Length: 122
Length: 111
Image 1 (cartoon, rainbow over the protein chains, first blue to last red):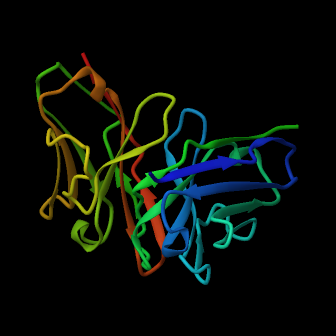
Image 2 (image 1 turned 45 degrees about the vertical axis):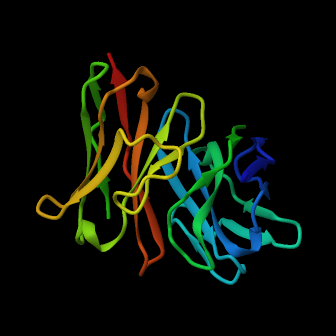
């Protein structure tokens, strides 16, 4: 069965960096685009970034453009989110989510991980 | 663009409830609309994709539709059960500009 397991969250000071990871299993990872979606405490869902199945295309929300970098290692079935220059408003649960169709960019999600919590505080 | 949902809705068990999602610009039919359910403390799950499709395992009590005249999408849940109590988010995208947008979410209370 499809599994997505995020890790790497924690407490970090404003201005510092953090790298999140998402381990994928139960499907052919290299066939699917992947996204990161976040949720601030008590708030709604916000799409953060997308990466195509082969890693060539990356797209970002304006709120993180220039600070966050999405990447993947298809040989390890891993998705990453490098977060630099973190701000208080970046706090929240970060989910990785899978595009529903192989070899395409569908911009929606069929499977989600359980999330990892990022806290930005001095 | 924006997707606007009511902040909350409530209904009694066994009844039917409809949650709306209005797109601010460009036709609602231009890009598919999805609906996600999020129970407290859990990750979201997909209940409707591509406007009206139901993933396997989602009961047929859940249905989706779009209305071009009001530029909106709707999620309808019939035969309400206490387990349907959750936050529901609509979601669409702009494939030309590579943007994904979520609605603000609707809290469903089953009284």
